[in-house]
Image 1 (cartoon, rainbow, N blue to C red):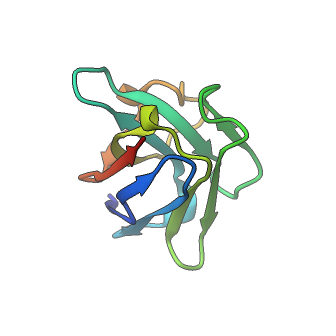
Image 2 (image 1 turned 135 degrees about the vertical axis):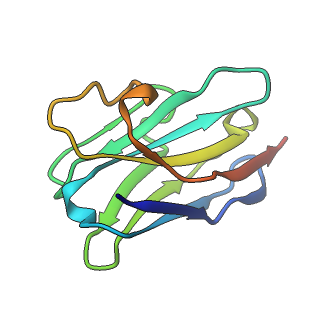
Length: 125
């Protein structure tokens, strides 16, 4: 079992940057693939980014490619989401999620077993 807590959200102007962190505790962090998702008001939750257990592979939603970077530090039990060139449409609650199974459908939030409570990101125009 793993507990997740996000931090780093806030209010930023369009074009600005934020770095989200997700701290994990309670289990072997390196045994989990980690994802970031977001949910805007009135919209469904959507996949943002994934990093594999040892950070050998990453993937991104088309809407954030080239602007967001996911990374992890297994020594610190933390996954990061560096968000640059932010747009008003990036406004959402951002969640990190963890999954231990191999070969799961990582773009599907229902595949993840553990979730953090989320952190609000608001981008003003």
